[in-house]
Every structure is written in structure tokens, then in C-alpha cells.
Image (cartoon, rainbow, N blue to C red; front, side):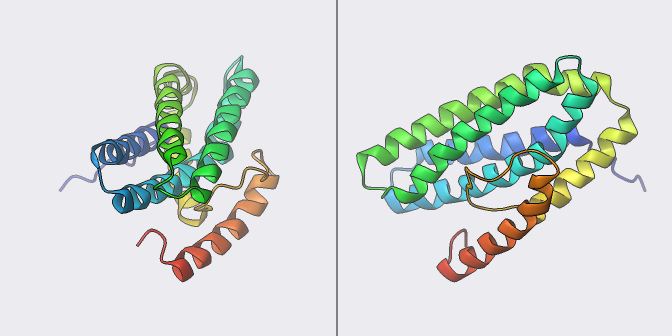
Length: 186
């Protein structure tokens, strides 16, 4: 019996990217406003959880191991902030409002560009610069963080350690309680 290899940070991030792309494809194919709203709520949850974990582990690692790590991390965090503003607006916009479609298209395009940049540049460079064992440990931490991360956008929340690590779990708990009460993401 072979034991499956534990995914490293890069593997986990790419797997998340593929899941998000799958939901984007469902959103684009759906003509039903209610279904589109549910799919958008689902992708917002996944994007927020993913972003929080990247901000806690991917970008601090990039800052540490890449010669231009601060510049790369700052650029990626700025893209997260922009997407978070769009997600916050989407939460407040009715699916029947024409602005909803424009916001969905903006979110999808921006996130696809972000994913492409990460996969073409940052992730290969990170894999080359980091020890395999460290990347596996970071992959495990990334997955654990997603389980307790917020599920809704919080544009004003800190996006750098240690403040984000302290506050994200509490915001995540509050978001999951809100989700349970409202029936979001069932």
C-alpha cells in the first residue's frame, strides 16, 4: 500500500485555483439568477478563505526567500484588496441588478489574471527557493488556516502577520455563525 504524498504549499494553492476556476465556469454557464447568486456566494467564501491563507503563509514566505519578495507580496496583497472590494459590493448587490453582472465579470477577470500571474511567476520561483519539507509544512498550515478563516470579505482587516493571524480566526468564527443563521453556502 502506498501512502499518498502530502501536498506542498504550491500544490494546495494550484488545487484551490482549479476549484475556483470550476465555480467560475459554472457561474458563466448558469442563466438562473438565484443559482448564480448561490454560486457567487460560494466562490466568495472560497476566495476569502484562500486569500487569508495566502496572506498568512504564501506572501510572508515570498518576502523571506525571494530577492524581490516584498515587492511581489505587496503587489499580490494589493490585488487581494481590490478583489475584496468587489466581493463586498457583490454581497450588497441584488442578483437582478445589472451591476451584479458587471461585478461578477470584474471579479472573474481580476481573479483569473491574479491566478495566472501567481502560477507563471510566484509559485515556480517559490518552489525553486524553498526546501521541499518546508513547502509541505506550509501546505498543511495553509489547509488548516482555511478551515478557520473568514468566509466573507473584510476589506479593512489586517493583511499581514501577526495582526491577521490574531484576528482572522475570530472573524472566521463570526462569519461561520452568520452563515449558519442566514443559510449561506448550504
